Image 1 (cartoon, rainbow, N blue to C red):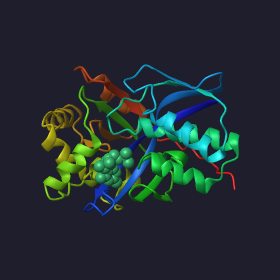
Image 2: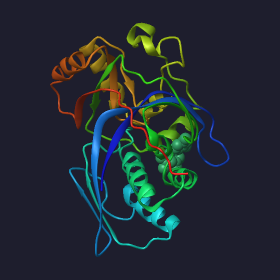
Image 3: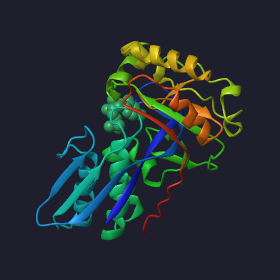
Image 4: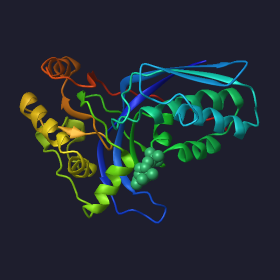
Length: 281
Ligand code: C5P
């Protein structure tokens, strides 16, 4: 069994004060993009997980493996499984790579084991805040901790140039810094930096950006440098460190990536993708 796990970009991310459960309610536009990990799932003699091409741990803390473990328990199935993950999505970048791996595994094994959509949803939420979105992916308005999803019109009038600087940020640390700074509201991108489909809707801003820059000022320098290089407004995905800007076509985004002549962890021109997952009933 094979699965493709697509990265996500938070086109918008408004953050609200931490709730009693320790998580921050969010409201954002999440978009799956054309950067993916590949996952091979097979029945085997022993449980195993391997990861090639990334810094993701190949043990029980691997989110893809947590998905195997949880869905097997839900289905009361004990067959040993080998999980082989080929990483292309950089880790600690705010691109949801680990969550995408978990969601892709859940999608495949839920069908294989006949687990209902409701149970899969509960498992997804327990594994991580971005996993429920990644199950169905595409373009969604996301609220709550990440579990309330509303389909939006698919977006197709832009490509993104994405640069991942050579350092990563810890998601809990960025949220804690946001609390320490008393919940800053980030500056929204101006309309002329946005594709027509995103003008006049939810403000396109990421409230975690000021907190991430406060934790690691290099991020602000990278953002300024890219804005100068590209002559475009730059935004951050998730809790960083991936930075991106909107371009009107993949060719334009590729041109912007070609201009980046400093060392990065990743520099890619990406387009929006729809995934689509139909839960069993
Ligand atoms: O759910 P996930 O494991 O991705 O969250 C990692 C950490 O990020 C949480 O433990 C929490 O500190 C923080 N977080 C948050 N509010 C969210 C999502 C994550 O405070 N909506």
